[in-house]
Length: 526
Ligand code: G4P
Image 1 (cartoon, protein in one colour):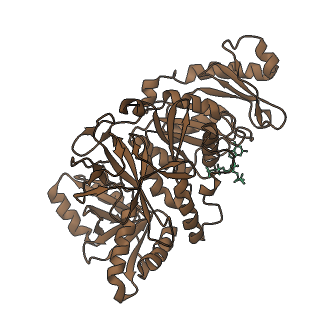
Image 2 (image 1 turned 90 degrees about the vertical axis):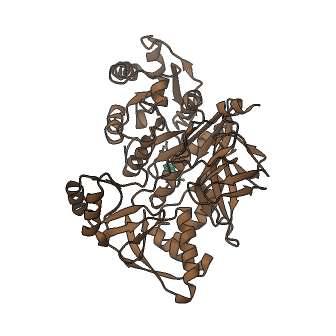
């Protein structure tokens, strides 16, 4: 098969949801369809269990397991599907943001009873920044939940998405009988009281046909007709180009647990989801079909084996064919590197591969050479853009607690930041280091890992900040004035970019009003 065929058969996507909405269950059902796993329960180990939040070692252990399920590949209807998994625990949200820069599309899972939750809002914002095509799966239709129109209204208003239902539920909770598949014009009905089994789909083009009453009952048939009429009046017609541009989002309803509505979602997904997309580098736009290999590191996973300081750098192939034992340029380091054991992932199995194509994820054993965002090429000096850091939520000074180990501490902090565990800011006034994280848990993880992997000890001190804002200036004079006024709150990030560690929401607002020649960004790429 040639490069073009390989590209056209690939679909690389991520599943996004608030913890507990059903991401793991849905992933598992998709893998079952693809034959990548044989039984339910196989991907459960990836989930950081509730109640484990205070036990970060357990979380690290589970994260260790999760490397195997970080990327799950399977074949379905001749397509190669790559699911990039994202950690459910919100303290690792930053990992998820970065993973989303490596997907070509996303499926957002929403719990019908809970509706849109905060974590989903943030993740969808990240998708929308890159106009990533999105499909929505409204899950847990077997439970008593809210009216379908209500849920869709909430998704539209909270997530700012324009929806286009491609399936419609028939009843909900105890009354849930199945869905009408608008995409294939079929009825999909449950049978039996346990609602586990699905009848064969029933082709049903004309809903005015009185046979509908016979299949789902008088009142459900009347309600379905009325609701679908409303759907047609309210929501836009499906249009693939609009979906691919991120303008409209197809919606499916179902129950992942009962494996209901999942096949419809997958069948539609393989038809409409984008093939690997071109990616912008600072220098130019790179197309997947270019013959020369290029790719970027979007995730680094450490501690795969607790006995060795082993890490895996996950590289998304953007163009050309990646080959084992071939020299590639590590652009930032200016070094030529060759990989003898690149791995790929098939559900829980990792295996060495000879080659990989655009859309694929390759795992490269890493001894500390890689940093998130690094580019590998066949020689061209490309720098891929679009792996932003977001403002952390927590800030603390980090101090060296063992003066004899300052080198180890510096190295450890440096490598953990390269991995993207947290962000480092250096105050301009006195050079003190501040660690910013998304969740408080990371401080314990850092302390533990510094001690066990680098033999260094650290302590923390509070630093009160509201948000980190990257500053972009159109007015050098205003910038100088601002720097003078706020010098105690100014820092450099790891790459030397100027950051304002705003002490309060009020202070940020006042600064924005007073210094209109500056822009305050809550993320590092703008
Ligand atoms: P997550 O990865 O998004 O965090 O969610 P996960 O799939 O683990 O699902 C969270 C809980 O919701 C699980 O129950 C799961 O069984 C349940 N669930 C998922 N899909 C459905 C559905 O369609 N209907 C119903 N009724 N429940 C669903 P749990 O009790 O937390 O875990 P477990 O003991 O079942 O593993």
